[in-house]
Image (cartoon, rainbow over all chains, first blue to last red; front, side):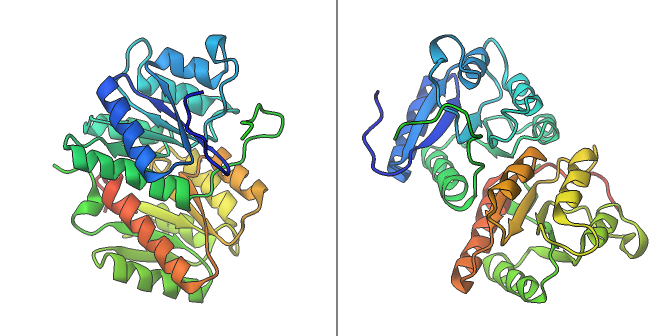
Length: 158
Length: 153
């Protein structure tokens, strides 16, 4: 396990992102913001669904408390991943935040129509990007009451 | 064309809340956080749905950019209002935030199942309440990208 040891409950975040640069920046920004976060990364849409369904190498994957989903992804794109999540009675309750460079009105509308929990535009500027990640932590992981994992699901052993 | 209404102009927020005290506190907290916010209030679930459907006395109501919805309401309760919003193709994309004193796990789970955009527990302490309203403003109206208004009214 690469996660840094942390006392208290761990917050599982799944980042679905194919850009290694963005993965790294997100990881660093979360680390600064909140030591309780365990960030998991899926680099394409197919891997994201395997993680969420605990298939293949992801058999022991935890259920994420929050999903950060890019729209433009290889293999299966983020719109499709979002549709799959929100059609699945077991997954649809996991807050799914779109985090993408796209500012296209069609993407914004489609995401909210598919019931993305919110849509954030990835800023190009480094500092602004860090601020957005920090605001995800400050709002979603600090203020919001997240759903408890359903009884009977595999849980983290923190 | 900036997609986020809140970063400019006047974000329209619909507060569905029956407690006069909470309405007043929310109004004051928004005024402190962001004076460009237009806060509309519906005091029960039926009133909220009329507002959203531009019916009756709400013929000229604007389409809200954000809905803050209490769960325990007279006439039609918040769970039902949420179900109606999320079953309606023209309303479902309006971010709907549950803001309630309930922290019952059943209410939280049910709200997310109905696709509430997020669930916030109303703090009892005044300062914590103000800070929560401020964080709603800072996140939803300043950071998040909201869907564009359609041609309404």
